[in-house]
Image (cartoon, rainbow, N blue to C red; front, side):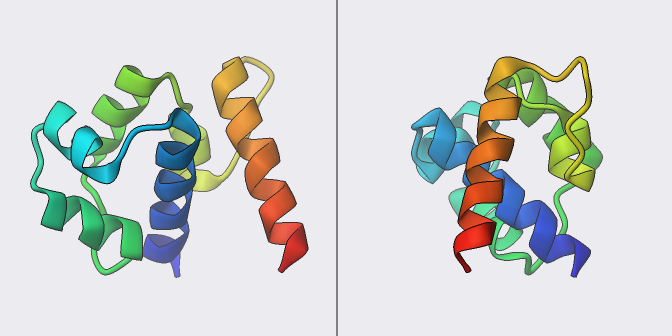
Length: 91
């Protein structure tokens, strides 16, 4: 379950950023297949990838890993969180 949630939040963040999965994979030096496995929740991404992803795109590690948006969270992360909450409510 945890792998699925982390993958879902990564996917939501990538969509909000407006880059393709291939672009993100190339930027962060991972294979598109490996990134796809993480986004589907087949495997859990390592902490180093999550740190690099969050640093590169300005997304909170707390949100990616735990789904938590805190007071100091960047505007982008808050916008992604709101979009994610709205899509969850539609289900």
